[in-house]
Image 1 (cartoon, rainbow, N blue to C red):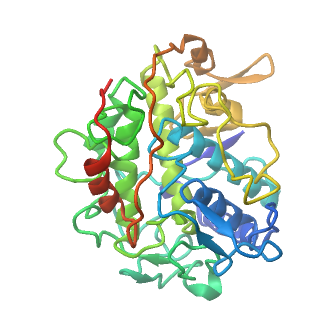
Image 2: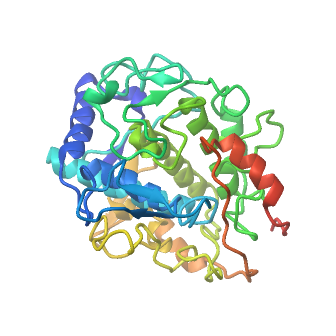
Length: 392
């Protein structure tokens, strides 16, 4: 079983191995048809498809900048953001790239490290060292590390057309001036309800998913943007790679989302009475959101092959991360039971406790794309156009 460790604890050898694996994935062949420039870029493309309506201009050529275009100025279809599936969708997303890292490094125990941004606020220590992610770019090209510049790390699919990594630590002084605090993290973990109607990014929706994603801001926080969203903005600044739909181009994306996934696991242990996921029934016009529905990871009009060949992932299949053969260094011990993996808190029994809630018909969520589509701008749009609805 793979162990996902705090990035601050990685040895020099472990950091070198992680960089090597990411670079090998960048050079490995794509599994999409038509293909992207490489296997790492497949993950950028999956995330891109989950946020944009787009088309390929010449299907005989690889999918890369210059060979795709937007066909709608609406930010759709929202399979993975501003919705209940935010956490299980990204859990599967990380699980698949972790499997690919294990394959290219020929080591089934490799785990993605997490960046605990509620504690590690340094701009020069891990993960921002020259032997791991490299450092800041002050709203320009990253200047140090293995991913600095187009020669070391070319971005072939980027919503803004930039071909190199850009960061701007804390330079969006309104939405991303500082990282989330431990107090804000704890306040989020204390919310008992996973999600609720209107199942969206309504700023008044005080549920665990909506607050961890960052649309509902923790009580008492002076920041206009919360948790997950704020970390993207802090890393990206005002022009950075972590801001648009192609944010996985920055390997920091995966360390950030690994911490989000870890916090979901912590929340699950803290609220064992459940329900651990809602909604239980399908939401009209919102595919892939209910407990037993297959989540969506690619647009069949864009590719004739899926990004991976595993059976369709459902939210219920994501509830116990130990069944996906990984654990966190902050997890309680796990043990084998009849050949399976179960946490000592017996999370795998929790799906039986899921309760069904009635849901209201919702219109598909869609928002106009701003020039840089910053989270701050999205929040402003959200407050203007989100339909009013009950918060529970």
